[in-house]
Picture 1 (cartoon, rainbow, N blue to C red):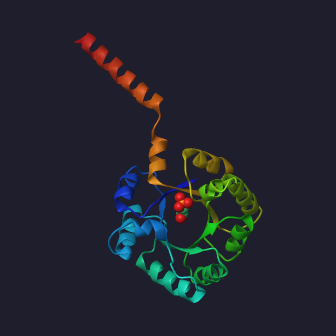
Picture 2: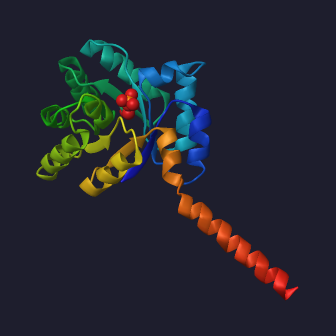
Picture 3: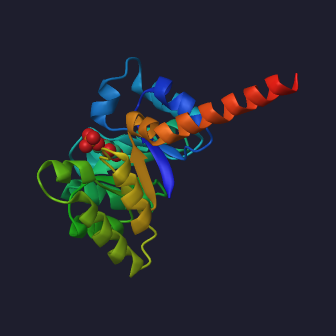
Length: 217
Ligand code: E4P
């Protein structure tokens, strides 16, 4: 399963990229609104750092406008994936952009039929939002199970990108279900690195080694 980070902040992306485990980045208008400077320059810099798929979302709502905006975003860098919302216009725009060879991530997916229609429209990725479903008392991961099952039956070539991740358990479940990608906020990636037994174990190893060295001296 590929790991993407869900942020538009270069300062958060750089240290994660240096770990050698980051495959890509997802942004959305809310995330980009938190970043200062020219968004195009920010996206270019993110692509340079990550050298993998970087989702950049359109902010228009009519298909023709989305296509124009999508082409402009795709021209920023070869790594840009154009993100469009799941609406009829978004699906139309997805089909047009995909036919031009531009990779599209269809976002705001909340049902298996939406994911299926986006795949039929040639989406490179579908982004089901698990956390936002959990927020309203539904089970977000159940949707991932359904989409992975459906995509396994056909040959869409569309990757299931688990989005709106809130905690490490979402990541574990996504991996067990065979999702292709998980996009994770930096704070949740940080949580994955922490385990008290790792800290205690390392401290003990180093102390034992020091003691043995002192005894030999
Ligand atoms: C990523 O592609 C999505 O835009 C993002 O994961 C949404 O997450 P949120 O529900 O925490 O805003």
